[in-house]
Image 1: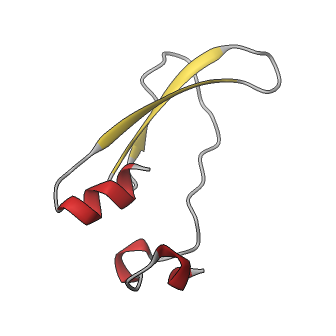
Image 2: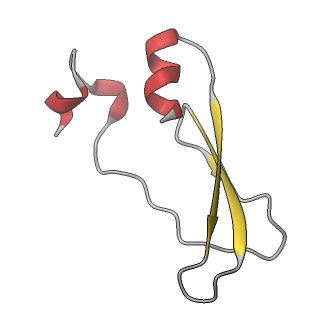
Image 3: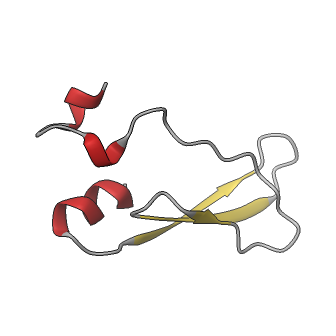
Length: 67
């Protein structure tokens, strides 16, 4: 995930996720960056996007410590 790589390297990283709607099968794309900001560049797509209830900025030496 970009938020892990971005925090480990100290730079901004963005990932593009190509997926499809589970209901209608329409393809769309979601972009997420290392600060957990996201955008949906596909016109007309309005997916529900959620983030974990873990403060990724306060994780210990291992991601497992946050869970």
